[in-house]
Image (cartoon, rainbow, N blue to C red; front, side, top):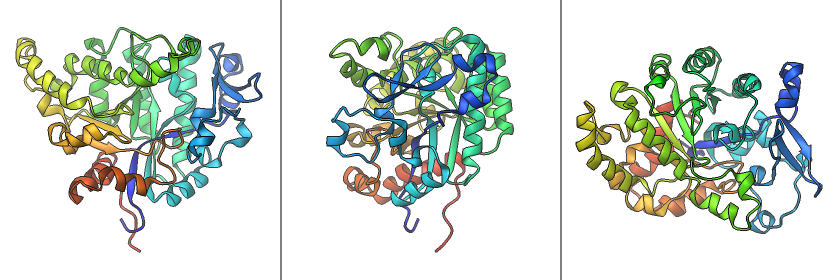
Length: 376
């Protein structure tokens, strides 16, 4: 490892502000993501005619707590180049002693979190533009920059076709599922071709914490003085909902080499959920003809990223250390950048060295086939 202390399993790539304006067919540009001015002088991202999302919380890595709380309007020209320029990103990783970074979207993450509606005609082209850009970004250093593509879900056939197209792109070993697909839900066996394709194509899948199915969208909650507190308090439960659908779909039972990662959903809930799943599956899973059970899936089919979670760490023996992967969450406001080494020591310093190395390096390196740094 040398001067590199860890690999981050969950970071974000800020999309260039003119990406869709330059690449979408002209008739779809107005329906795509773009930068807009706010009345307070700041900038926001907007997709079609959906409510604008201020960029401040998306680009706050490295700022002091006082700066994060200042409510100062943030403009694009204030954004650090490491968010969108690959060479600057690598420099930030060097500064933070991180060897590699697994990257998810920033602005377009709202599409996958079910926070916005996208025009059906424009949705696939919007996602494909992003997927192409991610591949190009990672080409600067494919072993250190690990990209995730975005999955369209208007039909299983559409989803599989884009997975096949993504597999032909370079440097994109993973595909992000939306919290809830456009068609039906993940428990529906109509999605079985997606699970089969992921295994056949060697793609890792993931689900990023977002909007629980029952919760109003963030733009609606923003009108309530306590709304954003509610969202940040319970938003992680969206991954619990989605993985419950996945478990009962039978995808892990039928496709034993399928890999799906819970991203930015914390881990403290996992011990109870795992034990409850075992209890329930012994009755209803057997009745449904399952040949395996949740204890077979944790750490093999099902993995999870997290930034810090003292409860989860205290119960790591129940969860299983093989399924956990640490993340920096660069460039979001919760990111440990540029003090990830200090963060790791504070949160994992009492763990056995072998366990700490699994969580901060070995498991994510194995999952994405990340080669170690060259010997000094």
